[in-house]
Amino acid sequence: MNKLKCAVIGVGYLGKFHAEKYAALPPCELVAVVDADRETALTIAGRHPGCAAYTDYRELLGKIDVASIVVPTSLHFEVARDFLLAGTHVLVEKPITVTVEQADELIRIAKEKGKVLMVGHLERFNPAVMNLDLTHNRPLFIESHRLAPFNPRANDVSVVLDLMIHDIDIILDMVGSEVERIDANGLKVLTNDIDIANARLTFQNGCVANVTASRISTKVERKMRLFLPNAYMSVDFQSRTLSRHTKGTREMFPGVPEIVTEDSVYESGDALMEEIRHFVECIETGKPPLVPGEAGRRALQTAIEIGRLLG
Image 1 (cartoon, helix red, strand yellow):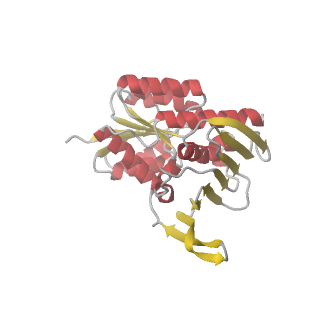
Image 2: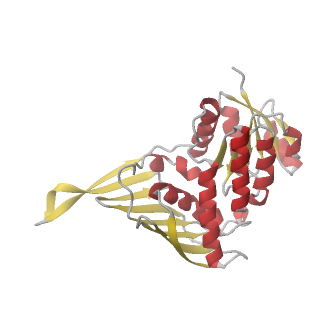
Image 3: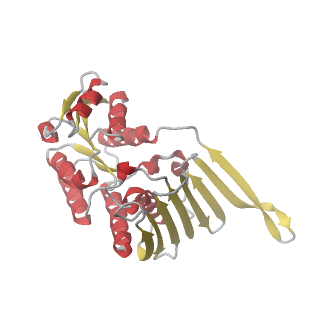
């Protein structure tokens, strides 16, 4: 069986890891990397035998099967569109595009061409999230905190599109209901865009999610707490821990049931490898991706509305 010819467009901090994963997957052949900085492209290509370096992605149009788009957000639409039109399967980093209209166009082209369009919401592949089964037990209240120290690498967008969108995507998928109302507050502290933000999402089914993100914190914290009709669950994305708290059969006090706690700690995994492996499997089998373009669009639309309210 012929291997899939794969390329990574943008091989900076994150893109170089995309290249490593394709090079390691048996169904794939990493044939090229592209970067505006020629030395960067040459350096990454040199680590993978048979991989060529380019500075212009357009030289690869119509010549590859699979492309990971890991360029700045402002370029996502143009690059992803060109590859989809050329008949290439596309994995585009989050956020999918700058505007909802651009996301709609990518979704339309992917369907028209019969190609897989997947969005790189990496936390969906965190083992603690993947083992969180809410199929028959939707949350009533969710609280999430995603805090990080300042890093100049990802400041071309607000903290909402940089960090909060991870939790927005997961929450929208968990709740399975339309957002009815959004309230938001935020501040510019170190950059010209919002650096710390809080949003309260009220859903049509009654669920409420309180979401906080900061890129000016003194610590790293990536946690989500879910309150369900008969349970409380906590997800620690950093330590890959899933805690379940439920009512037991005994009494803690007269008339008050005990609380039984079960902690599941998952081995240190490689979420990016699982994401790309899943993307490739979807290409090979035709099954729908875990994070299709529609999910990326939905998260983007909510994030844009939060940004509008923040001003």
